[in-house]
Image: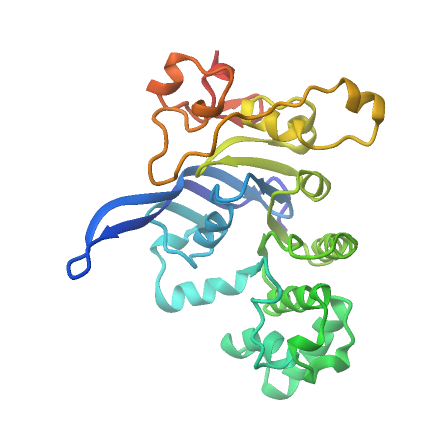
Length: 328
């Protein structure tokens, strides 16, 4: 039996660089887009780790690199004690049964030429799970689990709403009974009224099947609701990782403080007294990030050392922060 103290996934110095090339006839490598640049964190069995940050900071790329949909440039990803980065072929294919992904856009992630039965049943066929006669029953069972009519099995994706399509995506992810699921902004393309339904569904499924989530999002209120711990990402790096209550009550990194200052509080008196932190300037290019601390160009408290030395990823009483100001 596993407990929440057991580490299911361990990420060490994960890097995902995309090459920049020039030239028509001869392609020359002139640089790299550093989408993910040296991540270190772990995920415990049965927990939900929220991953937040502004658009383009590398959240989705992190999830894909963990699942080896993008083969990392460097670093290691240990799942159940085995290094996924060194796995290839059949060994990696077998391991994929334990790891699945719920994609961001339910309109683009479902094949319009396949029926719902074919979409949800495809993982069972790929991994040769159950005899063909029993797969139809399993698909109907999965549709019922996610709140859809099991007799919709012969319908096509265009016959469903956005929320129903995302439920189909959830059913597909559950088909092979995984232990770890990457939820890549699963509600960002849905109406607000439908978002709560999908969040509640994910929570119910986690309790029912003992799932472990990496929940990627940019809505901080949703992440606080569903996550046990939260990692804050900026320009390819995680700048703070802490328990959700500790993070929201006392953010240590200046970027986390700025993010949380933008979350509205449903109390007029508290909202009137609160100071909003407005970040100056634009996000630097991941192809040419600033020296030292990546956030220093927008930080109101930056010191000379921030431009010279990259801050160390350090443990501060159970929460991890990369900031010279906190290290002091």
